[in-house]
Amino acid sequence: MTDRALHPDTLLVHGGTLRSQFGETSEALFLTQGYVYDSAEQAEARFTGDDPGYQYSRFSNPTVTMFEERMCLLEGAEAARATATGMAAVTAAMLCQVKAGDHVVAAKALFGSCRYIVENLLPRFGVESTLVDGADLDQWKAAMRPNTVACLIESPTNPTLELVDIAAVAEIAHAAGARLVVDNVFATPMFQKPMQLGADVVVYSATKHIDGQGRCLGGVVLCSEEFLNDHLQTYIRQTGPSMSPFNAWVLLKGLETLGLRVERQSASAAIIADALAAHPAIAKVLYPGRADHPQADLVKRQMTSGSTLVAFEVKGGKAAAFAVSNALKLIRISNNLGDAKSLITHPATTTHQRLTEEARAELGIGPGLLRLSVGLEHPDDLVADLTAALDAASGARAAAE
Ligand SMILES: *Cc1c(COP(=O)(O)O)cnc(C)c1O
Image (cartoon, rainbow, N blue to C red; front, side):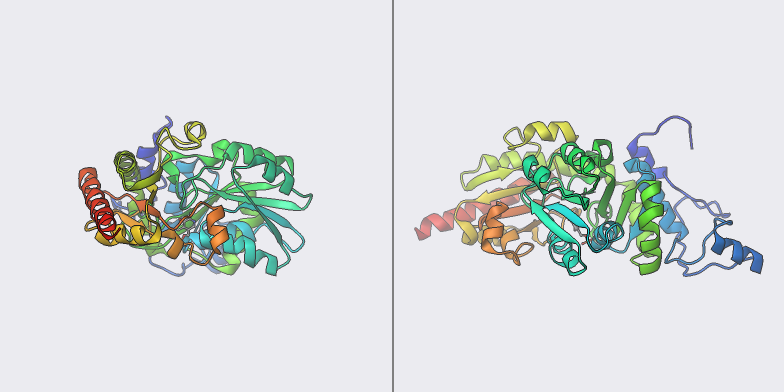
C-alpha cells in the first residue's frame, strides 16, 4: 500500500485486500470448498508447503485470509486464524496449547462460556484450573505453579465493566513461564491493544462489534508466528472450527465501519452513563469512561475510550429491573451486544443465570443490575427512552408502596 504507517481507520478499509484478476473494488467472496491444481506436481508442492497456495477451505480461503490479514494489521499481531464463533476462538486459543498435567489460571469474571471452558471442560482432560479475582494481583501471584501454561482474562469484564490490569498480569504470567490470553471483546480492537501491554494471544468474538450489525457469528485468534506454528495452526487445520468465507466477507464489510461505529457508540454511552447517574431511580452506574469508575486510573493507562456498554443498578432489585426493561420502547431486550441496535439485558436471570447466587454476588451481579449495549441511535432518543422507563417504573413502585 504505502511505506508510511497507516492509521487504524485506513487499515479497516484497505488492510489485507487481495484483488482477483477482475480488479473488483469490494472484497471478493470466494465461496469455494476446494482449489484445483495445474498439475500433479503442483498439488504435491501445495501439500509439502513448497507452493504457498490454497488447498482446502478448512485450512484457509482467500476471503478468510483477507479478514485475518486486516485483523493482524489492526491489532499489530504477526498472525491470525479466524473461527466460526467467538467461543471457537477462545476454545482453540486455550486447547491448542495445553495437555494433561498442565495448569491454567483465569479471572472469575469471564463470559459464561469462557468460564465453562476453564472451570469444567479443561479439567475433564486433566488440565487443572484456578479462578482468581482478576483485580487482585496477589491472587494471581499465589495461583501460579511450575506447570501453569496459560492465563485467561477479559477486560473490561462482562457485565460489571471492571478492569484487569493487563500489563501487571502479563508480567506475573511471564515470570511463571505462562502465556497471557486476553478476550478483548468489550474493549474492541479500537480502544485497547492487549499485545502492546504484554498479552501473548488476543481473541475476539467477531459476532459483536466487528460485525456490528447483528448478522453473523465469527471469531478470531491473534498471536505470534511462533504460537501459530507451534500450536494454533495444526489445531485449526485438524479440528475444523474454521470461519465460513461468507461470514468472513460480511465481517470484512463490518470492519470498514468499525472505527466510526464504536466511536459513536462509546460517545453515546458516556452521555447515557451521565444521564443515568443523575436519575433518582438509579443506585449505581458502572462505566469505564466516568471519573467515578473504581479503576479510573487504570482505564486511563490501558484504554483510549470508555466502552460501548454501560452497566447500572436500579433501586428495587429484580422487580424494578424487569419493570424498567419492559417499559423501554426503543431499546430492545436481548443478551447480545455490539449491535447497531441498543440492547438491554438482566444478567442475573439471563447470561449469568447458571451461576449460584453466591458466585453472582462475588462478581457484583445483583438483582437490580442491567447491562446496556449502546447502538447507533441518536443518544438523545436513547436517554429519553431510558428516562421515561425509569420514571414509569419508579412511579409505579412509589404508588405501590
Ligand atoms: C460473545 C462473547 C464471546 C463468545 O462469542 P460467540 O461469537 O458468541 O461465540 C466470548 N467472549 C465475550 C467477552 C463475548 O462477549
